[in-house]
Length: 114
Image (spheres, rainbow, N blue to C red):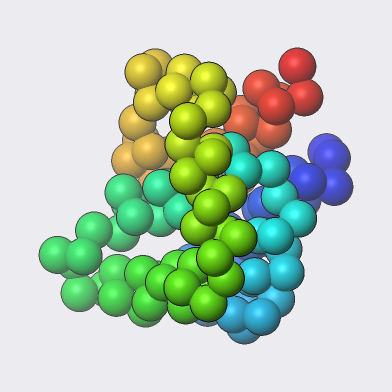
């Protein structure tokens, strides 16, 4: 497992569980590939819809991480345009990976490394 994959899994788990503060989340996100940032943010938004009251803390953490650092938002937009992101969205759904975040991260990491 690559360092980037480990950090992406750590960021995803931290945002989901609340076990990571905003500063740490931002520091990790700044170092990740734009595709990985886009995938993590999109995954959390898709699997924790705003209509679900239980999603509020997760979405608040995502907003806190992205709203205080324009570079993260910029990289997320860059990642959205990447062919890997487009491939994923054509062949898969973020919702199908709910509860399987590490598998999603591994799939994307494998594509980034190939």
